[in-house]
Image (cartoon, rainbow, N blue to C red):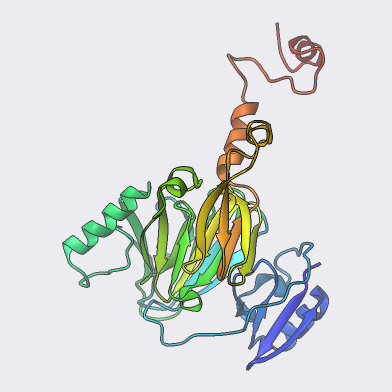
Length: 340
């Protein structure tokens, strides 16, 4: 079961088991909560699991990060709830005049008062702010990272009340909320991890300075640079693990499993070792080396790995794979899975 930590006016309690945390949250929801898997503390009122709306899973007890909550943000300040465990979606609550920016095709649903506008670039400069060239440069950055030239801005156009808009992850995995002001205003992420954000977050380019890292680092020469002080939601495959690296501490990671890191983390590559390990180890020729200080996020199931397994299991020339059958195609005919 999850082990929870709750914070009220800077006073932290925990770890608490699921039932104790739900009981405390029911008694007083005017605080913040955290468990392993959360990138940061979130309002108790925004946590579906403490309202019994999402089934808990097994997790080791970690040490929570410092409970810091920032005010005075330049980006829109939005509320949110994340639903689901493996096939997640995030529901963002907007006040009048607030907006969220999302990748094209990620919308799940929205209230009728929420308007949609397709814009050049990342939508960080809205309306009259920023000129055409600024927006054109933003669009060009997205094109270089392999994304669409356009993003969609969802705005609460009503005069009062709150409105909701939800965005779904494109494949099984985990959605992680990050308030960029908690990480020095900048996160470096793999180029397809961005899902949505509060308006005001800038999505730029991060170039690998070392040629070998660029060529063999898994994410190529270009990664995304998420900047600002608002909420951003990233998505990655499987389960996301967060690690805090101390100065000089190094972690060797499969190149495809690197999701994001703070700007203070050093990113390089190293050979796996012997030729035998490279050829028959199944891990490729290189590993990514992440060196502290700073935070890193690692995914357990890169989409490229999932797609590779799906591709290898596809029928060839109209036939089946007949996995596990010593009779091959004849076994499929006998079992009724295939005809003559």
